[in-house]
Image 1 (cartoon, rainbow, N blue to C red):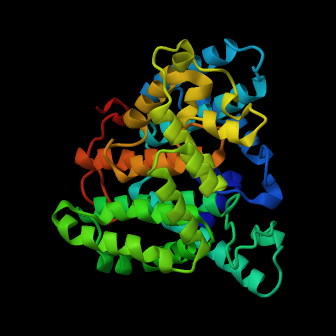
Image 2: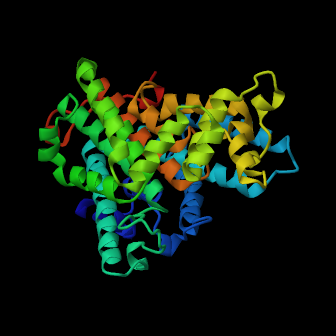
Length: 427
């Protein structure tokens, strides 16, 4: 926690200003939302101002057109084509905002992969520090709520959620906080996997990261979000090994049938939403949980309603098609994953290529599950989505470096330096 605070404060001290601090600042900023300064809804001017700086950093400090630039340019070109083909819904602010997110991400990606300005040990400290920052903020909010002060802006508590001690921590709402914390915790697991040479055991996590682990579990269980329980279920796949399958499967079945008897509304909402989703019936999902339906129905629609013979399937219906319907029911029935409804299947395919070439190392992975079920396979104009992509991409960088035998940990700093190669050219 102290390390993270020093890094953030160091960014504002001119004598300490450097690319490393800027990259860490980007990572932290796009994974949190301090509502009193940035607002609860709409555009954060703090983030917009930061994104406006990124092109300068890119052109002046890391002007290298790697594969992330090429693939992102192709993706954005297809998005613009889809938007221009429907002038009646074209909105310049939307495509400009997306361009700013993309340029910010390319700049961050270049700083990590091409300039190599963040070390393994520093990134691990930042990840653990962010988990603790989310936890401490949530605990302070919960104390405030219990003391009868449901509104306390200084600790990011600006809305009454009426979820007992559930609160939004350092994010917009509990569900977005759950998404970010799930990605951070998985990142921590992956980093310790690199450090130990194997998946960390419970004992190793207790020794190396007991407070981030306990803080994460407390936060996910008490923030009052059904999404948090979905995230925990997805993260459980990290610990499931093939050799344990026969043992774990009966346990999961017992848990599944035991959950309905647990009187905890966020858990029950998650349980009912999962059951409804398994029917692949959007009407049933919408009837079961309208909030969950906004995340589940796009998945069902994408896998069941695509007409590959329709021109608009490939090139989209234009900006905001999925939310253009005045009736909420119609909006849910027409939304799809990854902007397919708006920008077409071609742009979606390119986006998938971007992710698995530049962001997530393995297609069959827990990272893919999180991106699918928590982020809807999208590059939407939402800051925490891009924040998650930044975390995934950073972990991938260290995984590749470790696979090539080029990773030097802090305890090995005195050993002879190993010459590194350009990770932007990896398979």
